[in-house]
Length: 298
Image (cartoon, rainbow, N blue to C red):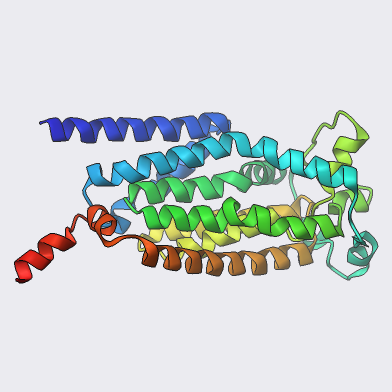
């Protein structure tokens, strides 16, 4: 009975953390619906592990991700502001990118409508973090710490530090700004400096790199509903960056290549980390005691 109580406490704590993640992200009704769709077939990807044992590792890990999610946005803008103030961009690619035929992705808006604009704005505004959080939350309910780490590392944890050199060396502003068009996101900026800081980091597209990394990892799962949903959603995020005249085509291509490299790097780091984990700790996590196995063999 006590065992079931602790399992219930763990489930309630997990639900609370997921709810808090949504609150901090100001998730809309559509965000929750998308998450629920992705969770529908979660049992197909669950690992064979006791919930209590998983909660010992999984809940603190989800809590750490939640903490950094709440504080990470401020850190990112501090870094962006530092880069803007120091102006260390040896290369300005605005004119170069504009000179390449079809690179402005104007073709993506060949067919447009106010309703489509609203949908694409919603996809773009939430896509930077929602695609990652859906995958992390789902991997939590599969009871897989390895998957949680894989999604997290392939997302912001590795991409933020690895992408900063590009943003510090290359000055490339958003398509609409370079072409003198209206901002389709209708963003409000208090000062001209705030505007310039928001539009200056384009290469590679991090909206693309985050969503494409999640797409690549989602394809490894067994549940087809989840895979197809994430392929559709992540593809829509990538398309929205061009439809809304934010990123150049080459930004998107570079973002996809960058994401592929980060996913492979995350795989390597996790592989090396697993080899360093003590056998007794592995036994606790897998619900198998290596010392017990040796005794039985004797």
